[in-house]
Length: 411
Ligand SMILES: CC(=O)SCCNC(=O)CCNC(=O)[C@H](O)C(C)(C)COP(=O)(O)OP(=O)(O)OC[C@H]1O[C@@H](n2cnc3c(N)ncnc32)[C@H](O)[C@@H]1OP(=O)(O)O
Image (cartoon, rainbow, N blue to C red; front, side, top):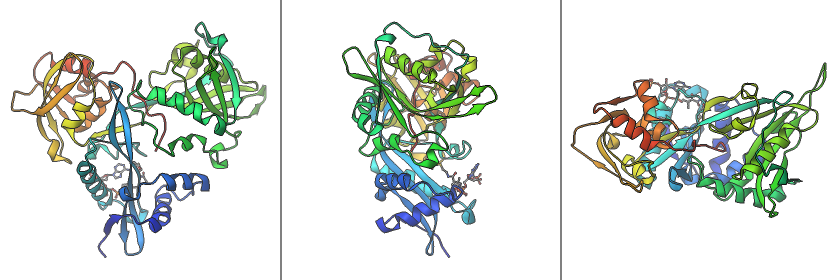
């Protein structure tokens, strides 16, 4: 029987999601999580592949606006819920979903598609490049001390019910979006993701706890959400503080929150995942080795409309460069582009017949797009080739962001 791919109907969502859970191993999510993702789903952007009555493939997209270098927000399809039934793998179902989805995204006018990958090997073939890294930390708080900046002691910390603190936390989040590329601006409903607190998420740890940091003016300047997992070893208490969110643009509030987490009684480890690659906490700790920073690929970026995407961000230095881009999966991007950046950092990117300066694939351009992975580094792996001497270093400087791009949450 031929497979049929179609946009999801509202009454098909549960069957579609059951299929997705099966594709991920069959352990159901908590009702709380399921309800949240059902409410966030954009049905008209959710594709199902059907074999008769059986759903055997899925892919969805969220309509995000993503921060890019220069503090601007760019429409980006947040690709999600990708799964193919174990019975139907390796016969092109994912490839057909990616084809349909990227065509739809292009038709809808979003210049970017982004995703987080269950496995890094899957999405490069479709033109997605690693655009951000998330840092895992495991701080040995029995040994590591924090060297905090002046003003830290003037910060007041308060434990507040996470639900009641939500509006203040959201204000802090909103202030961060323009400062860091890679962050989705909050869309209605997504603020609830940070409050999810099912037993399965706790995994033996406490309920979600929220601590807010108030500045001398009494305003909330930062917050952390965390759980404590008690543990008793042969020498006594050895609990773990598991940090799920910590945001604070103000350095004193930021340091106060980390110091607090590192000094919670009966714990000897603070664990956090998905932190920014340049997280300032690396400069607060007395011993970075005993904080075990460990980077991991996080947000993958795909330029769907290459010209529009490159014009949508800002650049650090002026530039005039001709790029020869390989893009087999989206051939409308393939070929030669001239990228010109003026003194203000704004760019024009148009088709060109001029001699080529740099050769690269759309996947590598996606990696460089948010400014965290340099063209020079990609060239070191042979992924970018410099045909006119000097253009690589100039382009690399122009693309780089002085703040590492960061994806603060999954989707
Ligand atoms: C954004 C997200 O939602 S990420 C979540 C992705 N989903 C999962 O990981 C759930 C479990 N896995 C699955 O559901 C499926 O195996 C999928 C979706 C990863 C792949 O679906 P399939 O229909 O089997 O992929 P398809 O047949 O189109 O394969 C396309 C190519 O990708 C390759 N490929 C597919 N899956 C993988 C993988 N996990 N690792 C490496 N290569 C892979 C195939 O070998 C094939 O290569 P080829 O073109 O050289 O022959």
